[in-house]
Length: 195
Image 1 (cartoon, rainbow, N blue to C red):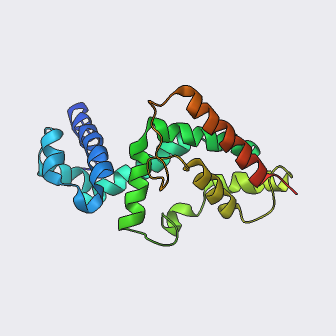
Image 2 (cartoon, one colour):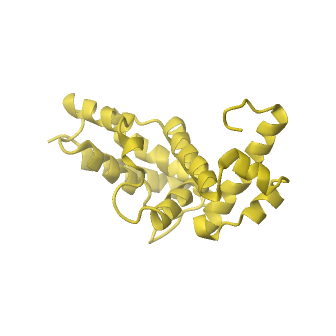
Image 3 (cartoon, helix red, strand yellow):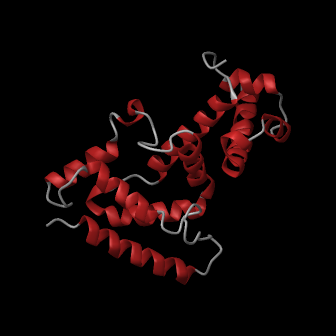
């Protein structure tokens, strides 16, 4: 079915499956997610799910890689201002906690060590190119671009839904979020400052 264009009805069914499965995988992980719950909530059947995605793992992959793409598009990197990027990531985790949970399940169940995504998915990472360009322009400290990116992302996740210390919630008082944003912005600026 992936090779044929979807009808509007087929596209709607596929999207319902993705929406329901995103919540199911975010809540239960890959192993704990149940296809039966997904198809029941999406008002479809297993044959359609497997026709669109091939397997439960294929469905997770579609959701996981779609979530990575969403974060890149919704929170594009500005390597000249990595502190602002970190704050925008913090805000996205508040808006969409399910996306960071998906990445955590992928880490726990698929790739407990090393890179979260395979090399083919990292080869031409625009974030790394942007950091390298900012380094060449003297805007960001020297060092391996990947390590700087990893540090900034880790700092942005300090209060994320997968924090080992405290998971923030979008319903907390705005001044609390502003205080965290200010601390995050200042801390990232210090970490990535040249010299």
